[in-house]
Length: 205
Image (cartoon, rainbow, N blue to C red; front, side, top):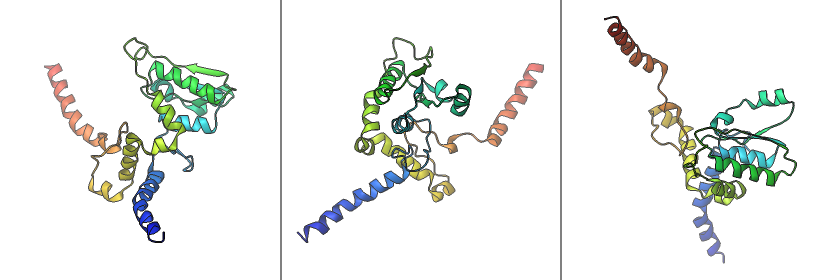
C-alpha cells in the first residue's frame, strides 16, 4: 500500500495541475469565486449567474437584447433583472432557456422576449440548449468540454506577458475575438486616407 499511494499520486499530479489551471483561467467564472468573468456576455456566464442569484424578471433574445445596459434597465423599471440573452441565440434556444429559467425560479413573473427577423424563420432550427443545460448544472461536464478547455487555453495565452511581447496571437478560443486581431486606428488611417483621396480625385474628374 505504501508503494501504491506515491505512484497513484504521481499519476494524478498532471491532472490535478491541469484542473488547477482550468480553475484559475477559465474565462466564465463558472464557480463564482473570481468576482467577475472576462466574458460577461457568454450564455454560460449568464445562466450560471442566474442559477446562483435569480431575479424575478428576465430578458431573452440574441445580441440585440444581450447588449442592454442592465443598470439603466433596473433604474428605469425599479426592479432587478437577469439578462439571459446571448449572441446568435435562435428562437428555439430562447424558448428552452425560458423554461430552464422558470424551472429554477418558481417566482419568475416577467419576461421580455426579443425576436429578430434573422432568427424568426423556418430554416433556423439551431438548438444548443440540451448541451448548455447539462454544462451549467454539471461542473465535471464543463471541465471536460473541449470548447471550454480551448477557451481556457486562449485566456491563459492572453495573460502571458511574454507571448504579448512577441506579438504571438494566433491561438483563439472558439467564439472569442482577440484584441490584437482588431485593426488599429493608425493602420486604418494609413490605408483608408489614400483610397479616399483617390476616390475624391476620381469624382472631381
